[in-house]
Length: 511
Image (tube, rainbow, N blue to C red; front, side, top):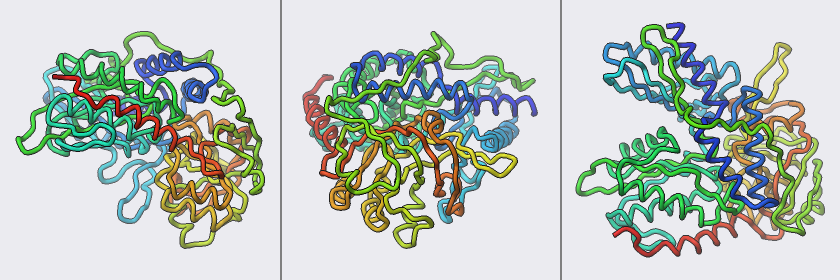
């Protein structure tokens, strides 16, 4: 039991901290396709630097643990109850050591269990087979990309593509639309798994199962092979790009599976996964519990050790600006979309629970002229009781759209940092109040943790570590202005242009 616990603990830690070889190769290829000096190139350089830092620090690539999903195949006669118990212990131990963020929240009370355990977490799927070893695989799929999953019921009408019927061409349209609707909110460039058929539940399960395939494999079903190749070629013509900044690479992988359905239903389910594609596996000796072999280890290993973060911008007239809070309205009004901002000094984290709380309560600190960071960090406390940041990338900002503009005006907040952009209500508030939205690189949890030089305090810990308001002291924290106080939004522009490009794929392709 101790051996298998150790093996599963190693699986959890390696999955959280080290990207598999096939994913690294896809990211390296994308980096080569981007023109030097663009926001996309800068973003991909930050991403590869983050991968290198996670390797070196043995720390989470991304701060978002997501909903851990284990897929376990066991020989006949192996006690699955003992394996499940070992998984629970491995999860709790990895959380205790800062390899995972505590991410299991009671849906009724909002209480965080603190150890990633609770009803439904983690997800464990068992299957028996005739092999003589245990096949154990794990995927950590963050909430940002999970929220961009989508399911279509055919026939349907799709924005930009028209009618999608119950045929291969209708499926093609659904997949192309799924990439378009994700924009940069799911930390593009990303990977997708597609499930054709089944019911609403089994269709999504089939879609997620495709993410356990190697990104380098070839689909044995000829029609699906052609479909995967078509999507990979054409999705990257949408111009959404890394983080939704525009660019040559929007999709890094597409895998499609199919199952039977009932006559009345025809579902196409898409599981979207961000660039931080944390998925690993191993073969375990069922008698000794020892690791026999690691999976997803075919081919060359790219360690990105020589990577440097590029200082770049798409526009010649874009500037680099240093900000220190408190920030004045005059300083904000001078910023424009495309400007690169470096922040030194204080910022405060604030996610879903904080935004809801601030709508009806006073802030625990003076937020006038301050910066809010949409972030749920991985935190560790040392022996002296001091907090340290282990991982601190941005979360998807659009969830705060119902609150953000009102809270900025109520408390005098001047800047918001997150990923994926925000909507029309926030854009209007930025223009009226004098504020900016700064886009950080999603998933770059080690890169941004390195910019945080100290934790000066914390408020509202009753919401749990991810949702508390952390007081962070930062240095050279870099982000890009993507929504300014003049009514301009890069996200709105990219969405509009990608919709226009999507429309070219209306006509039938598969007969």
